[in-house]
Image (cartoon, rainbow over all chains, first blue to last red; front, side, top):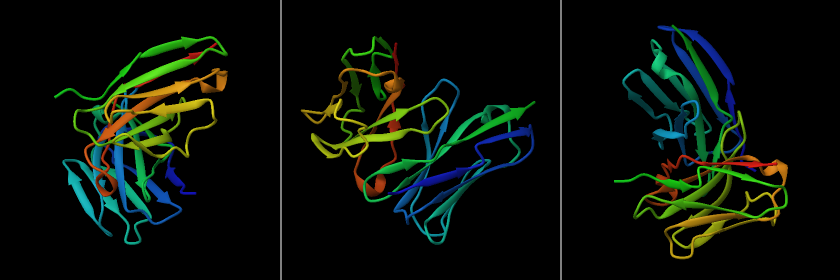
Length: 109
Length: 115
């Protein structure tokens, strides 16, 4: 079945440093989505990537979808304490969406 | 408008009890998903509805789990004869359309504790 691996599982950064999380799927995806979950909260949709090689930016966040549509990354430039949370990728196959384990980001002020 | 709502927010059940978890999706959303999220893990897919049709229930862990969405709106996830391993947060998500545009909007979840 479809598997989505995400690394690293944990990341501690000093405020102002950059952060990247990577997502790899065992199968080609039709699209990939990224979500953020704050401690005690629920996943909140950030963005969806559909096209091979697609790059999207949201302020300090840059999302990439690989050429083979099997991997993706989220990069945060100059982290802030408000970026704290767990970032999940979710790869969509035919109909099912498979979530990665998430990367828990801690930002040290 | 209102987001996805779930009730109850917290449920404590004794092992062997039946529970029913409710999800009210965003009005007009066609797709509805149920996930199980254990502590420190990502959401694990349970089942998917498109309107009232349950198109995928491959993630339901056992025949003790049953979900329905009879009128294509509100959905209920029922767990019979709860076991301790059922303890988790159960998340419901809805989406406006289907397939390629499945950005999902999550509810706050129901935290189920089986004692």
